[in-house]
Length: 167
Image (cartoon, rainbow, N blue to C red; front, side):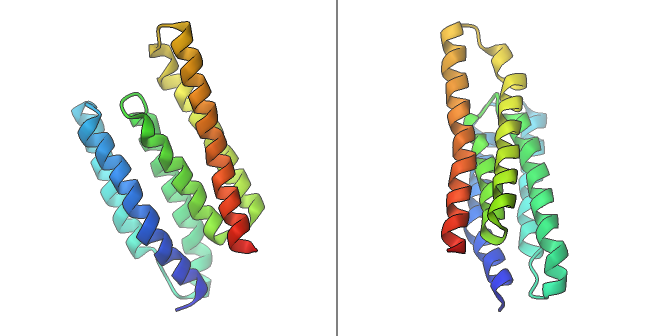
């Protein structure tokens, strides 16, 4: 088993189940509407199967598989965060998982760019989906402060993991 395949299997073993748990809780606990829950279940099942089967030990194929996994998982996570954030705030953790996935087999710059992009996406989604529903200015300030902290976490932790792995 080569190093790339081993990393992909580790990512599948740790990150995919955690992502599934976050989404399942979002579906079951959040009181989201039925169509939103259906989207959540459909995407989590697709994601699990896609990530389990998109593993290869062929180095040439891995040049295609790895970026494909990153893009597919990022798009799925953006959709899930957009749909579920008004119902289940911990859904933002999916962005950390996407960034951590990149941190495992990419360089620092790519990890930083992906993490920064997802942090900005989180702020935009929060502004579009959550802020309009907040009534009190104090509540808005508290929630915005939390989202900024979550965004910093999305950037800092994957960059740290990347540096640890690459050193």
